[in-house]
Image 1 (cartoon, rainbow over the protein chains, first blue to last red):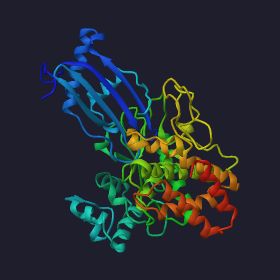
Image 2: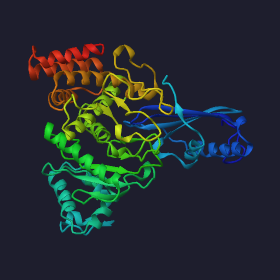
Image 3: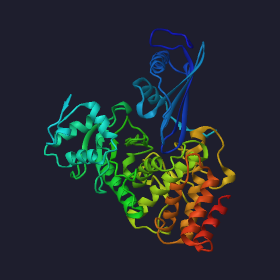
Image 4: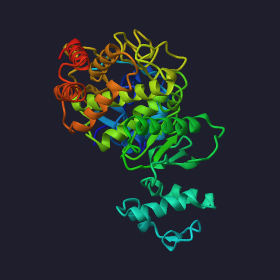
Length: 108
Length: 351
């Protein structure tokens, strides 16, 4: 099991990257967040959200113009990745996305 | 067991759910007609609405006389698992207070009319399937899509995008994905996926030009102009012309669509760049339509429609080029100005 579990709903995270791609617009936008740059209260909130996000991970939006949100997380135990259909985001992922400002990325 | 009091015919009065499922896929025209008649003639609209909310594909029958059949649902900000949502407007109903509902209704109607009048096509499947739309999907969802059964529209975040029903070419684009799925069913990956997006973009803008009676010269050739929000200076999402829809935008970056084969995207992003590489045939269509003059939805649109019906699920760009050439030669002659303009357009984008 990747990632140290602080409690049933929490992940010992170091860094995360959130990317949103596809959709009718065909855009690629993303943002990164480091635990070390946050105050402890917010970092703990993110840890809780990540725990819930991992538990509720879905799959990529597999239909024309589907839009996928991908979450890549670095933890002390190693990395993990989860994908979500943007039209069906779990509440925790929606809140996590709201903490970040997505910026355009160059497709690669 | 679900009891329906909407129709005197015993087949439709007491309908267990498993039978409704069977009805929705029935090949028996009489059964389909009974169901459509029951819906159309119902004196108890509430019962029909309840029925169709629980079994939305019940309504996805062939229309018996090549008439529009539209249903618009409200998902009320919930997710995919709640599709289609609550039925809020159906065929023949008056406009409601919600503009998203009315736009989904009106623009799906325009799209139906376009395909019927230009190509004698009775809805997405050619057999009168009901056009099902759901609005207000998700929270601030910056997207619209065809999920294989229906259209779904987000409201946008209010900054980058506003509601996706606001643009006729967006609605036409999504419904055309439904047409494609019933024709060549282009695989949504790499070049075949880019062709899927290309056809959706082409018929999206042609539907808009047809409704506005715009000639190729007068048309903007922009995709999604009306859905751009106040947080961006982008003129649209995509531009069929030689320019870019946006450049150095702080929230969108720079329009990444190539206009020439030499600039084709080869990475894995976006299913192999389906929304990027569609820019190459999009620009060829633009050049072809402009060279022909007049209304792009007539001669150029007819060649593209026939080509879409001839391609297969794994068709590549080169298949697109040769098929349009074959169709143009068949329809207009091997020495025609149409074929010359087409060859010039493909050559200009690298073929």
